[in-house]
Image (cartoon, rainbow, N blue to C red):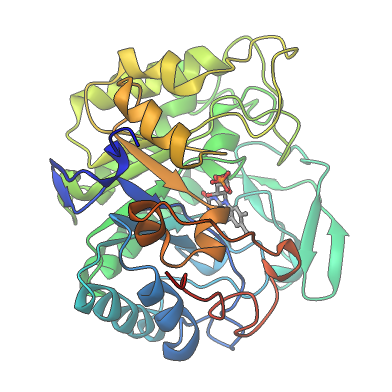
Length: 364
Ligand SMILES: Cc1cc2nc3c(=O)[nH]c(=O)nc-3n(C[C@H](O)[C@H](O)[C@H](O)COP(=O)(O)O)c2cc1C
């Protein structure tokens, strides 16, 4: 067996026991009035996965405006903060590290989540997708274009959520600037048609993200902040690539060299983009030379691919999504070269323990 780069420690801004990261995954188990993480569900689930070098939680709303899915937890109320305190304690007691993913879905929502009000976005452009509401799937609507006041409110909400994250005991925060959600809606030319300082040029389209980053770093050291991007997302979550898409991400990622972040987290394309104009098919290889800090890569990695990408120097850390749903002891399985269990897609977003906390550890 060749060297397991995944299992080596990592010490740059964050000290990790290994380079295996649990990717952020919405599991829709906060099915209580306040969308609060509970001890028996989220507490146990994350504790079971504490041997990861780093856990990144599911996307967690920074405000009530930020909601777009049923039963997703938040990090804006006192009650939610208390719930997360217990989660971080359980992970820390097992020697793990945990960041929280800070989320605003923007237009990937529905008025049913906002007492009939329109969801917010960069521009009033319908993503023409579906929203999973308490009454089932409904068509998305044309959102409200955010006013300057709305943008300032969102910046404050992210800052407040980051401050709550520190109080809740998280080791850091990840800005969810990925996957077609609010920041991505500002980055992308098909969802951002603004004519003010937040639209038009690449610099303008990135402005909101950097305002949020600058606000967050007032309440949490930048060495504890990560940011996630999915540069070649196309045909999903309302995103369409254009000639500015990759240059926009190049600008953002290069500019992040002026910061000293915990990491930049990139996704390889979610779909085959080899025929898509303007898309880049190999994300880590394309962006690694542009960024001096820690690069985390994700999407469709297994043991061999994970070890290889670190060995070749295209990434420092590898985030595993679906494999972490079905293999709570993923690190131990990699250590012992054990088989990996298959996940059950039918229980990704259902309620209760089934398909959530009932995946067993491997028997050696
Ligand atoms: C059930 C599920 C929920 C997800 N929720 C989130 C999320 O809340 N935030 C996010 O950034 N990505 C989310 N993702 C994307 C994953 O983080 C990851 O990018 C994707 O699963 C590809 O990695 P994999 O091939 O290792 O599974 C989700 C994926 C799955 C399968």
